[in-house]
Length: 314
Image 1 (cartoon, rainbow, N blue to C red):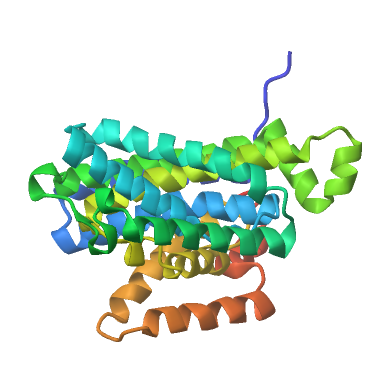
Image 2 (image 1 turned 180 degrees about the horizontal axis):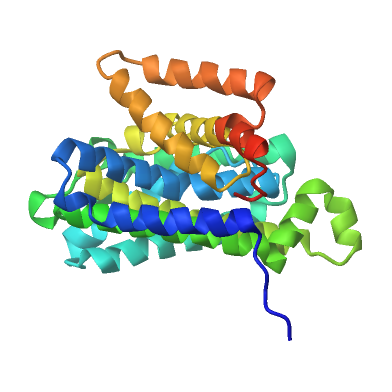
């Protein structure tokens, strides 16, 4: 039996990843608070953007309310810890579980829609949840909720949680991409009618992708509430989250695993440079998305990977 061969470039990529992970694991012992906070934010965005990137590019599902599941994950975490004394690891798992249940319920009406109708439907769903949480006293209504300091994780511990989530999210995307599920989703994204004629159940695979995305977005929201210690419906369900996630995906490389990694670094640094100028970050992000879409559709990493002949999905 012949051994499994691996593309030389992929071997080098994996080696770089192993070295990078080893270096990242020692950062809390040498980095200051500001650097560590920036890294937690970068890792949070990587975990969230990986699945939006995969879903929108490979499955042609442009979901324009990723903030919905992030906010649900954040609210689930704070409610679980504050009201029921559930430890963070339990609240973290619940944040993903509740997001999955809601995604499963939403998949029935939403995934019957295609193209721009799906995108519009996702925006409406996000707004409905925003309105619901703004009048729901159990979660603080419009005043929001604050996570007490006694329930907050130490920053180095939060860093390791964020690092683990970013790694698992990235690895999961790669595994799904290489699996039968990934092949089916790419077939559906390319030509749903043809895929259906070959026996692929489009609704089932789209629903599975949608639910997996919700799972990791919910987990990301759990990290977010530990990072900020506060959430309200206006911030948690803000459309600005969608702009940021789309910016990360397109600027890095739409459809490639390393795209959200590079895009997250750029996004966090951009926010740091524009602090104090209200709305400037979003303005630059919006302009950058338009420029990338029309002039550099492969994104920064996409351009680099083509020059270096790095195979998809990396």
